[in-house]
Image (cartoon, rainbow, N blue to C red; front, side, top):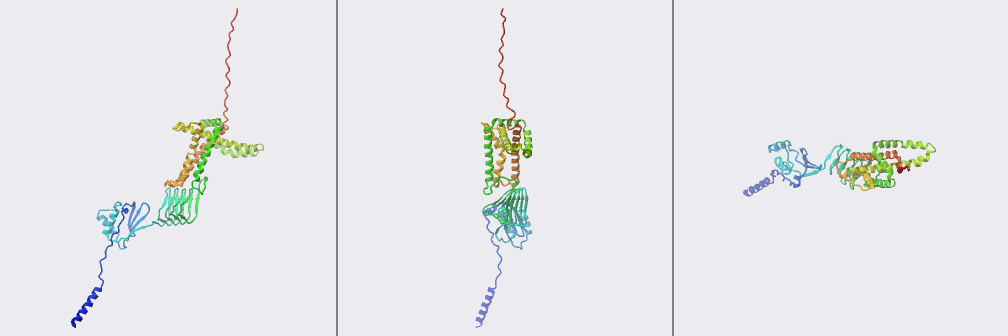
Length: 408
């Protein structure tokens, strides 16, 4: 009996001992597998701080490696120095991070791709602003002289002065989207919760329902001037040639006279109106005179430029009409170039609204200079009627000389 009691007490004691939990040594979780693509990341910046290891690539994305809060970050520097390294090599990103993990023995909570969070706004002058996919900007985004591309989230407004605001299908602007001297372009899927405002600097014929209408309108205007040049030269070739001769002789003088006449157009018209006799002239002949001066002057300056191009290049124009067309193309070259860039400006990343305004002003200045010179030359020659054609006098036939022979 005594032995049975002793056996029972032994069994109870063993059960109590076995029921106590034996502390287990913590096991370091396995290092997560890193894709081979991770080593090929175009990493721009690596930062080790309280939030973990933060890796920023060139597209603005952030790769975070979290660690336990009790990690002594000062150990990282000593470990790197003891291993002969002063930094993490980008080319060996995977191996160096694994070695750093083994040395510090901290836990990886996993790879976390998170959006870049910009607490304030962004203001930039001259260069474009790109809000990357997943990026969040808490304030306003303001760009002077270039383009704003929104692929992420802007909680404020996006304002481009002298540029464009482009909201992609993944972009969102919770405030207003404003483009002064440019356009606001919203792709399908993009969101603009505030106002959508586009204010142009220069009034150009445009149709908002079709993005390429501005280019089409410039091409149509070019074709109208080509047709006007062909018809003008066909109807009055002698007048055009006389105006062209005046341009070749006194180009600067024709420019100054053209500007002067543009200033005097309205005063001369009012002067004719206040006289009874001048009313028919002011209402009928005076506008017709100005119109013909502009048309014939433009045709003459187009021929003048076409001949200059022929003589200084290898371009050939077999007829005077082809020369007029060549000169018209030269006058419209910058305007056409501006319209093409404005139509496909999104393909040129460094091109902003400020550059487009400068190009448009340069194109307008060139067109105005040549048109004014032709206009002044047409007025100087009185629509190509001066100088008058000199009709050579008929040659007087020599008189026959007769010799009288004395007869005896």
